[in-house]
Length: 451
Ligand SMILES: Cc1ncc(COP(=O)(O)O)c(C=O)c1O
Image (cartoon, rainbow, N blue to C red; front, side, top):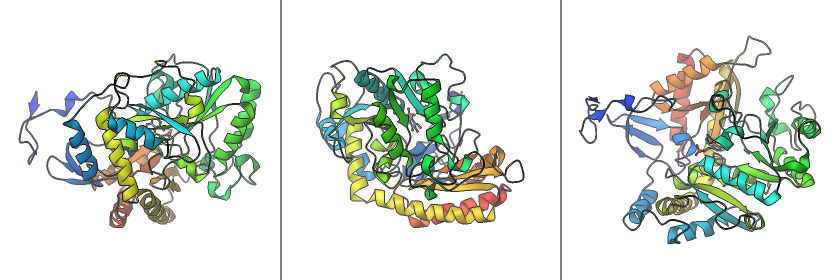
């Protein structure tokens, strides 16, 4: 069946009903978009939405950045597909070379794939081959994708894996230092500089729990890798204490375990550094990236130490589309834009502006338990202040605030295991005026939602 096209539809043609899209795509908004410009999405009826989801952290350079769009168009008329096993192409060679220099330390090499989950699959396959060990330790609250292996590594929410058992084995979970939800009481991760274990007043004790894991469930010498998000994404935009990753690096080194930093959501300027590991100066062995790398074209990959990458023999891993030539052209243009327009610094500055504003809102609304973030990965966690210890997750209020914001044409998302977190992921090109506009809309939305 076809429906009448919405008034003002760009093409004027009849559009099929939205029912053609299966309900498995859990839906945030039911608008039909026609185009994007910077931080804005414009519907087929001409309504403008401030997109502070960035299409789940993808549109870091803003929607349809002219330089990225031009690079895609120029490449598309020359070659759409140059398969990696068969030929080399210029955009791919340039991108591989640039990826070697994006992260301090190294020497690094890169492998290209299509989605975040595929990058994580590659990282796990490489870690197992390089160490000849079977076990992977992931962190509670983590999200790593929707393929069988990456579901097995994911613990952000039951919906991501609950219907799909059995899942691949030899995966164990360690505690992530979630300071707001620490046993006993919440504390400020910023007060901790040395990792939770040695921090006065910090009750996260992730390190003690990890030792327990080594004593009760798995020998450390059987562990190939830790996989960790430098800031938990789907798990609720949880920023760990600055000492967490350095301490994890030490533990990994002590046991010959590799460290995989999953930067699919935190990478490409999102947190106010090009990669989030740079905040603590930790060098991972393997880093996964996707989302922001190509401004919306499907591209992902890993950056790995050259000595580790060498363990893959030719044809041990690959894929038909990995390193697609048009996606590589988009990625090269994306890196140019991030650099030339100072988007990493803008993410840091706009992130501070946004978080300051959210802290002001927290002071006025008791159902906001926590306001937190790093760069432009920012969140509010909602609670029931009069129940339990005051930190009972408040799913209803979270959903209402997000819905009220959408009514006011601001797109934000939820996160967290109980859907108790509202996450805000603006494009890195966002302006001070747009941040003020969003804060004004959120203030109204909190009132309207009775938060
Ligand atoms: C940290 C992290 N890893 C992996 C993934 C999976 O990426 P994709 O959806 O592109 O497979 C995501 C997606 O949100 C993510 O946030």
